[in-house]
Image (tube, rainbow, N blue to C red; front, side):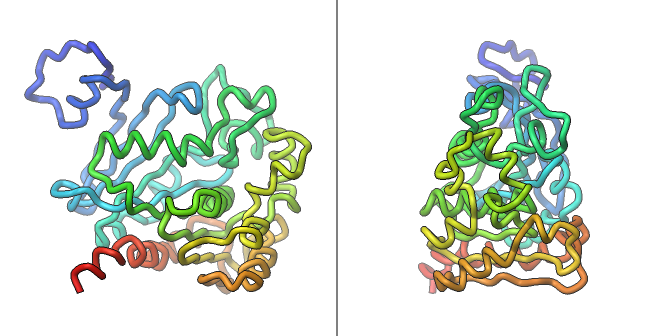
Length: 310
């Protein structure tokens, strides 16, 4: 179902709220909408100015969104993933429904035949690293920082029953890196931040040095705002932090959790970094601790409202 300004509506009364809204001035495709834990799991595509093409995202709205705007938890995925991986594997919707929280599952990069790519799995499409690329051929489309922090929230706030005054963010692997750096780079936007197996020190890792050189150039000073361990030492986060990494994660040498642990301790950051015995890097690990993370964010997202009614 494609909706854009000027589209002729033959059966207006049969259209859903979102279809009508899109038809009145926006260009968006409803890929799917399915009942899920009393709410709705949708997938939507839209024209993105930030990324210069079509972007797809998943959005879970709990039942409460039918009555009033609900807080938002962003989930940023890792290398090679699309919006679909966490949406179908992480098991987050059940816990979000229980807490009355919306979940957003963005894609990890722009995509398409006209979008630059690389033969390697860790560069190009599926590997945007949540930065605004400045180098060619990436600069034309790879502006994931602006897309996640500004463009997509604005669209969600305009079109769906979400409360953008109450946002939190989480992610896995590359997405954990993105969640941490966005939270510290945009203080005040997110009430809490968590991560599963994040890339903690990309400036010192093969998961980072290659990508930052390609996307941002050789000046390492431009990399630092996108390194969670450096940002934790320099800036920190103005809310609670929760990090989980498995002791059997096959990518520990690339993730470097010890660097973030040191930075958190040095800053005396409000937070927890937990090494979970026996767990690896997979979605079996993510789903095992998803309840902890959603509950952690719920406490932050509803803290003001609870305080007002106490």
